[in-house]
Amino acid sequence: MPHVIIKKTFKIKTSGFQAEKNFTLHGAAVTPELVNALNQGLGVVKCVDTANRIQFKMSKKNLHYTAAMNHDFQKNNEEDALVALLDTMEVLGWKFAFSTILSSRRPKWLVGRA
Image 1 (cartoon, one colour):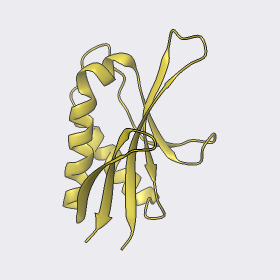
Image 2: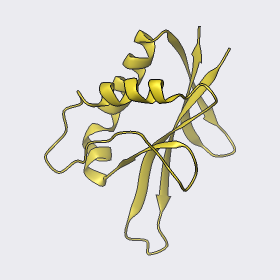
Image 3: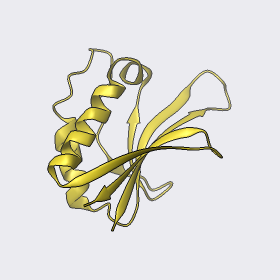
């Protein structure tokens, strides 16, 4: 059964003033078609005026599909985006499990095809 991990990353930049926040998709089951469907699902998320709209794009840096969030998006709309992602994947036939991996202490969604 193929799996996809939806991972949220939060990294403090060396300046200490800004942080990078994003969702990344991991796994061999991540295809351009899946990413297209997820981006369409994210397109219906209503955002506060100061929040950026997130869309998954291939990152040249880490070779994963990444959706970067600004602070206002994370503060006000992150949960809405996560629900939109999970709703879209459920429509596509995926099942879910929530996992906190102790070594990183970062929550991740493990998504498997039924």
